[in-house]
Image 1 (spheres, rainbow over the protein chains, first blue to last red):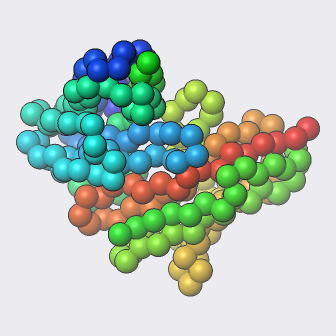
Image 2: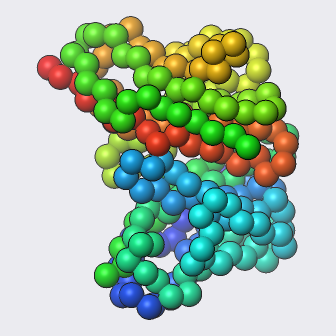
Length: 114
Length: 114
């Protein structure tokens, strides 16, 4: 089924550990986004990409890095996890000029940092 | 820059009563507006979207929203609440230029009393 797939779905990390979250889409979308969701704060943009090989910072980029080496994949990395990065992470994508069709979201990754 | 304000982090209604969830936005360019619903421990589901066509937008599950440019509002309504409507609702704004990222409000949790 076409869509956005996030892996893993759940993860528990110890403070200082590193990990990479993978977002994969099979719709040939140009734009991809990483959000984090925290109670009472809605979803906040971490990083985004407007095409293969490009990345840019969103509103809350500190402590995260991203890469988009292939058009279909957008990776979010945590180099040294902190308890403040405990959150639910969502990936989304959209095609250029296709806001009429809306965004496609992944099902989320629940990350706990202890 | 764009922003969204959702008035009321918690709204409680009786089953069968009118649901009104408020959303005001700020955007320097013509906005695209979205309402999403999130059930506990689930991802985001699109309820409806405004994409510069009709100002009254009908969505799934009996919800609708009206775009009022003069009031910069996009309030979500449903004539008669059902127990299954209990969830968190997010209003979001985007533009079809630049990074095309969604900017979310902080969310409104809807409680439906029997």
